[in-house]
Length: 129
Image 1 (cartoon, rainbow, N blue to C red):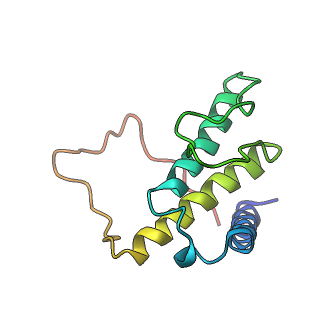
Image 2: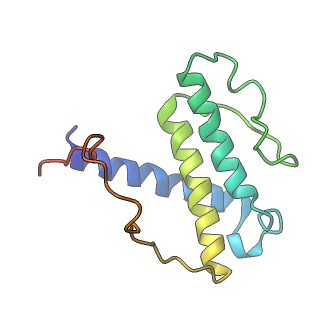
């Protein structure tokens, strides 16, 4: 699979997961359990467990990480890294959608002059088309 195919597959997986979440819990604007940032916490919690497992913690999915929403049940591994990352990203997309619906500013700020680019560490390698 080349980079473009992989990117298309990522979007396919994420949009399918968002669709699953919407089917399970209903439209975001109709839910009461997401008003306190629970989607953010769930997304970061899912990614935290992936991080821990990648760093050798075989029990990473046995208990929810401390950031995972306290009132939520069902924390688990969805399989390998890809499905667990997709679930985490989908929770974060749902949270971003909620913030936009609440009128938060989506403006991305540029680097300030005092935040200089470090050529030693560089930028990620570009993908050849």
